[in-house]
Length: 322
Image 1 (tube, rainbow, N blue to C red):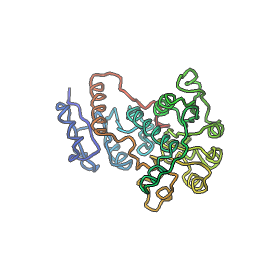
Image 2 (image 1 turned 45 degrees about the vertical axis):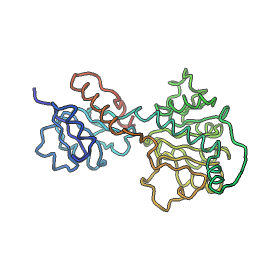
Image 3 (image 1 turned 90 degrees about the vertical axis):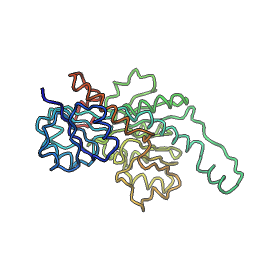
Image 4 (image 1 turned 135 degrees about the vertical axis):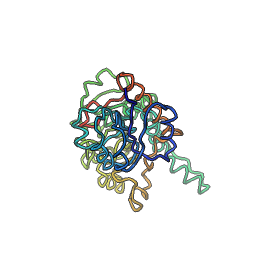
């Protein structure tokens, strides 16, 4: 039986990838970020996409004869999927669930940021100004979650701990009929209703052809003037120009954003100057050692792959990306 071979799209100088050979010394890892580097490599059993972009993955894919498994260490797959991969029978796994807990913490910190008006507190403190004011209570405020998957469920659990009723919008609401974390599950066609009823709207949907621009002008205009939008899903799920207009005109209270349609966000973008925006440079889930954790979870799946066991976090619908 020939040794197991894994092609890795990354660089040999990456300290996180250096751990692969240390922790799985009997596996042949071919690590490179240039397609010709794989020309003389043994045919791969598996392919780990660590970094490099869709074009690199697609170019290497054409050389990966016999590959049976592809792993992507991110939850979202919209930036790397291409037709040949989605149509193939190759098993695709991703980091589903790895970031849900920490992203839910970011959501609640953003909700508290606006509810307690922490920006005003910081301004007053910097100006040495004693400025008492009334703050909002989260108990009883409604949280609406657009995209009720693993991240949405983690958010709902924490919102309920604050006494917030939770509305969940999902493609198949019947799957959440008995979910104790939510008050009501709504179909995607009822998104205007969710926007109208919510004090805080959390976007946690993956980017697919169906969700691109899902939250547009009509949805944002349906929000309450006191409502806040929090996006931890994908930037392009929200119509950014429509959101900017609403924020500039004071149509909604504010927005907390960890994801953007273009990343890095260009320097002159209005989001940087708007006082009613809390901006995170897509690092809300970057905890200490998070990349090592991704390597560990890949190695656990590699152990399963070698043993013929079922892999964790299999993408069941590659066309949809989850």
